[in-house]
Image 1 (cartoon, one colour):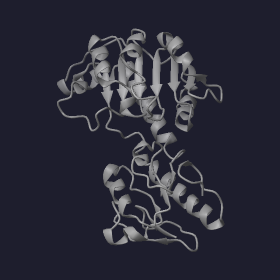
Image 2 (cartoon, one colour):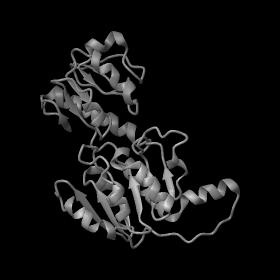
Image 3 (tube, helix red, strand yellow):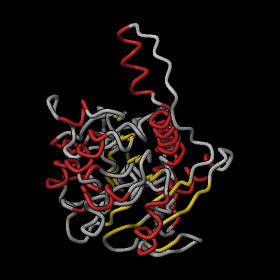
Length: 299
């Protein structure tokens, strides 16, 4: 099997050949040979565009946990695996960081620091909060584990209601009582604008919204209105649109911290991403089933 990844020095099993890599995109001359493709991490459309030229492609191993963008270009008969587990620690710690920063007023602190203003303020603590985590997958559970020593009550919500999570019909009932809402669920037709104007308005005064899922899970215009009202705070690693244009009103909305979609992109990614790809290729070499298959035929 011929493989393209961003890493030139993977430990490969017998029978697997790594094609030359520049760490960004495969060479046009190699596209027809690629059978197992790992788009370079954070390459976006640039990493997905070459797929249409891969006539012998059998497997795409996405380096991301989310895969809605890959589904749009997935050829018929090709297996898609996601990177569930790879980004748990990195994304969860950013979510907690955004949460604490938004609750404790870091957005204002940074503005005051730039101006040289010593402006003592009294802000809301994370302690004693009721936290709703929408999405009970690996990353959501890791966020919950990180918050387990933060003196908070944590409630999980998911579509299936498995593993102790509440089903989404309970979310609307409990939303007005939540001090924090953390979004870490896939973007689907059902979850698009999950946090719409009605739900954002239902959040209690002083509540915090953290989005480390996909930008379109939140109605951006409605969020800007709520932030400008001063009622809620927010920490966002994803936005809609993305990248966020320089003149977009979300940049200047008060009580909002924005990071540029860096949740999984830390030093934690490379060892975990490499390990996943090596493990997947090992499974293929041993005739075992692939892990994390999310679309296409099982292999």
